[in-house]
Image (cartoon, helix red, strand yellow):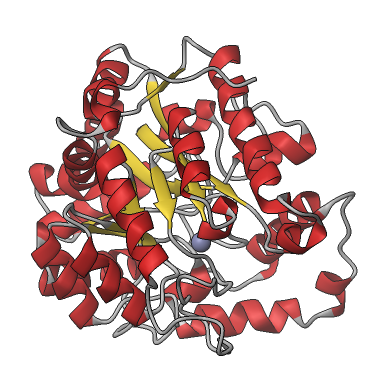
Length: 387
Ligand SMILES: [Zn+2]
């Protein structure tokens, strides 16, 4: 879909200011595993070129590591995370005219004022720390400013939102888990509670002295998926001053969409798909579902946004697409050139310009600014070169 062919002048003008802060994108895996240069037009959901077209101003480049790397070798998860983070540094070095590192709110604003995309490295899943606070600091020094405490695998120090935790997983956050949260507060790192179990979520909120985010989730009242937040969790985020980023992942957004994905995943055509590695297979699977599935309308995303606004208020909702980490998106949000369609849809539902700006990026920027501000190491930190 062309990014702005169908946009109204009002939406087009807003997109031209590139206000979007996308709190969760997974694209570095394509650069590492498929040698895609994210600074030019590529396959998949997001690159810097389409981001610029679509109104993207800032994004969290997540380093997600399949838990199988934990078992593969000692330090395997840590090594894979380091390799992904190196790709962020390479992207930065290759495209300095397009992308700048944003290690705190001031740097983010400087990048945007210079007309560049502000890139913030993140890690999705505390298993990348291999149970070491030193490793957390190592990643921080090389730019990481967001940690999703847990992914779908339970850890010794935090329970995920998935069922099936064994006795070795704590009910919520262990004492080490609380140390991780406190250290992140001191460093100036954003605590991300998407994927966290409910008790882990509340334990982290109780421990953190700073606002937190759920970078890529939806509302459980609209679809009872384990990855979505209850109204009580949304109200707790409001009290904390945090933000819920609404995800573009179809199975999280809608029961109908989830069933449709499952129907196609069970098909012979889907099972025959192949790739030279898991990242390429994932890309092919996403293309297959996007092409074959009954589309999910963009309004479903707007409904999740409206629900957070209703329960927690306009200041507590944002966007965390999970581009390149999900298989299928709603219609009109197929890639990073399409944020303008969401802007248009929000205008159509009666949000005014300042509200749309807050939803698309202002709220996330506020939290990032608060977390990386004076008194934290992030406030004055230089980015260490990656060697
Ligand atoms: Zn995720």
